[in-house]
Length: 341
Ligand code: KG4
Ligand code: ZN
Image 1 (cartoon, rainbow, N blue to C red):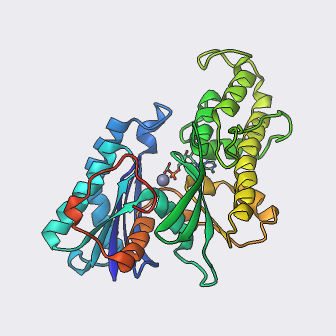
Image 2: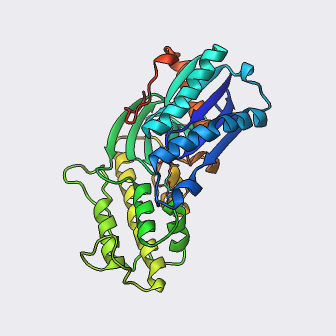
């Protein structure tokens, strides 16, 4: 079964052709980093316009790379949320147009669920549910008990910034380019993670929730002086910057590890699955590998960790086999959407 995946939830336009949910014949991603870099973050209206410009060329390239024609596609899977409303509409309307014109089934896929599915696409058959899902992206930070594909319970989530968003904002304070995650990681390699005593937040009575806004403010005060605002001049030396980056990274990602470890054991999970753009971070990977979780850890392949359409096609295939799809024409873009729908 050949599935065409379409992704346009934020600032990446993606189309992919995936066979039987696992064999990736093409996975084309057009990134908008160049467009948003000048603003230090994603500008929704610009994102939407760029999706319009590139979605058909990206589709053509995905079909070309896969050496397949549209008529050979059996199912269309599209990310219908969560995401930016205008951005979602472009992918969804493209998918609906194709489904109507080709008379093919269309299934809507949850983008966050797909980030977790990315690590399961070439899953060793020994993985046994329940699994702990750890989503670390630019828009989400959540711990999820995965009972099976399609059945989830939310264990905890961020009450303010997502972890990737905190990386992006700290990078902006340091004058680093957007997206900030890779820039902070690179700087942190030459820094001392113990120099500044940063800590991520604790949410009272909710041990599995995350909070990064206090950490972000603490970093701001270190860079610009106590009680300063974000427009104040930098007061630290250039030589301090790698230590700031390393100490921030250690605090933010150490918190993800600590809460994941506790949740994995408290919720009796047989493995941990990570998903989202922050899984690109090698320090995060080394933290998880060094900590003895006592269960296997599943990471997405590098080309599946940032936003992409292969994970959408993969999950679309799994969900279609499990429960078919309703009338795809009824799908609407969802800026927020419960997991599993
Ligand atoms: O999953 P993703 O592509 O988009 C969302 O669904 O949000 O994640 C993008 C986020 C950005 O915040 C980016 O800074 C972060 O992932 N990121 C990283 C790294 N690479 C990307 N964060 C830390 N270290 C990295 N190496
Ligand atoms: Zn994403």
